[in-house]
Length: 141
Image (cartoon, rainbow, N blue to C red; front, side, top):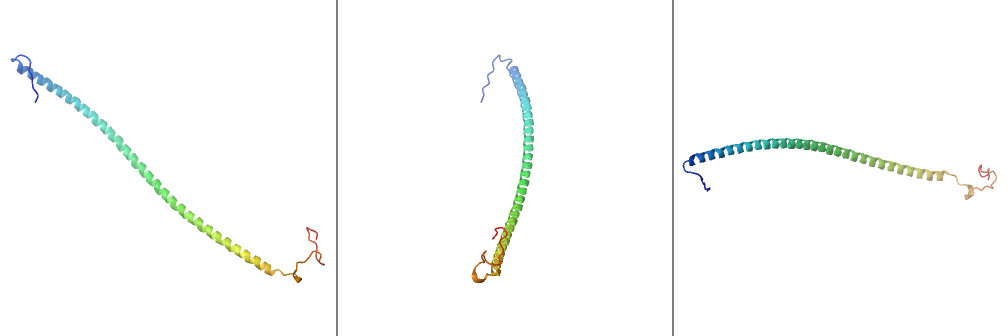
């Protein structure tokens, strides 16, 4: 417990204490006013900070929405690219099958052409010196 010491004569003790209490009350009232003003300023600053934070949160939400849209677009593009790749693969397989069929057809036609060529009599190719043979137009034989 705090100890109170009164200095002065006993006759004016009552009035000095009352004046001191009034002074302390006035000081406390002034301090309270200053504290209230500071609290008001702090409240205004907190309100401004809250508004900035709200604006930042809204910007983050908008950015998140934009990213979400970009992801959806990328997913769609990937799906289209996959379908296109599958179509290209199928087209290449069809071309390969067509080339293989044409190759086989050409092979068979060459084999048939070899069979259809008449063989010279005697089993040997004709020579340049045979009678009735015309000379080759480029080689002169």
